[in-house]
Length: 177
Image (cartoon, helix red, strand yellow):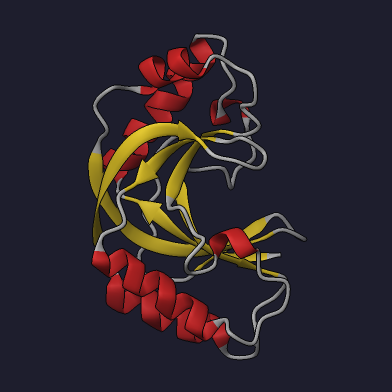
């Protein structure tokens, strides 16, 4: 599996990580417990089995041209499926356009996950996976009533087979964990 992910500005990443830590401190499910070095707040634009030939460079060019993108978060919600707890991302026109362009580049890719495809995609930043029956009202209060703002400033691709990332933009800021 290969992904196309947008990375948060340092201030937005810090706000999301702070929410992770508040959830964990409250005894709720949280991505703060995922200690893998690739774990960081991100927005997934696409997930496919593998990139078609030439796609990685085209994606890099596309993301370099589109970023940075300002972002505003919405409410904390639990999505269907595996029930992740997420901060919804308000889909600005520029973000929707970038998402569509990424899928145009990946049109020949196999194994695309339908929940990331245009028309079905719910842009979000994950706070916890498999939230399930945990206390949703409490989680919303703990995560934060005032959604932060920031920007998406870089892009990367995660390789699920090797559990590594490759940068898709020339600038990929990193903040502490």
